[in-house]
Length: 88
Image (cartoon, rainbow, N blue to C red; front, side, top):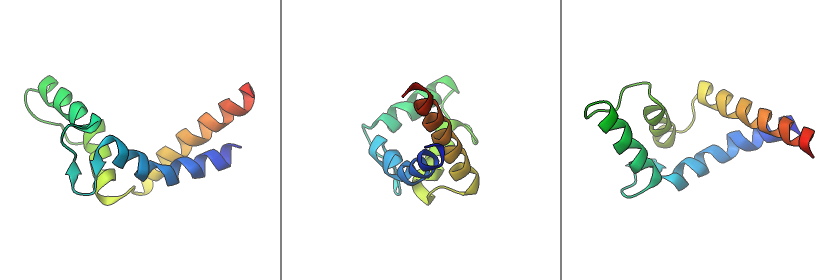
């Protein structure tokens, strides 16, 4: 179950990122991603810090997932799959 969940999470990530507003052409106006970016910018005095969660998700949404992001998403998916296997 964990390997399947890891692969599924890595494959689903671009779709999920797009659905919440992290698109290949930037953050979609009025989306959840836009709200995240606004909150982070306000908290940081007007800017989004490089390396922040919003910056990483936007990079992944625009360029696809790189090796590190794919590994992170796959690892998280594997962990969730493992927990579900224990519960079920």
